[in-house]
Image (cartoon, rainbow, N blue to C red; front, side, top):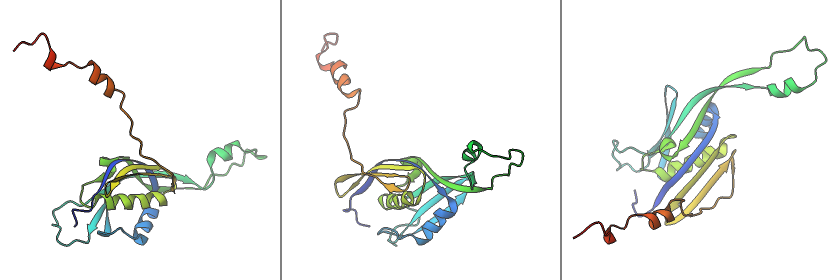
Length: 193
């Protein structure tokens, strides 16, 4: 692993959701970034862990590689929108048919950086895997600030589509006030030498 190649993820927020079967299909067909040979998918109860498998064999098996974490939820998916059906005019109200539906398991990558993207070895590469997953997801948003070779990059993917994003540095609300209203201990008349 090259330590000269500087890549970090500083901020990340995700609300991505996609069917678990779609995620599995996506991982089977995915092309992984350099440094990652494969992604192992493990399920523990209602938690999914996608762990990077390093192509560098000198990395100890005890060194934790970056992983993505998602929760698994079951949602009822309707073939026809129930609200649309209720609002449509029906001649025969007595013969109401049941709407076709099924329970579908969804992988939900929701939270901030430490919740969704864990461990530092191959962190940027697993962030790229998450960006690919975000483009496959039909629902949710992924926003991030990452650094690649000294340059900050903004990422924003909404409902599967990459959108323009900028990194904006702003002064926090308390930054100016703290400097002006703080106690100057060096020039305090109540403290004597």
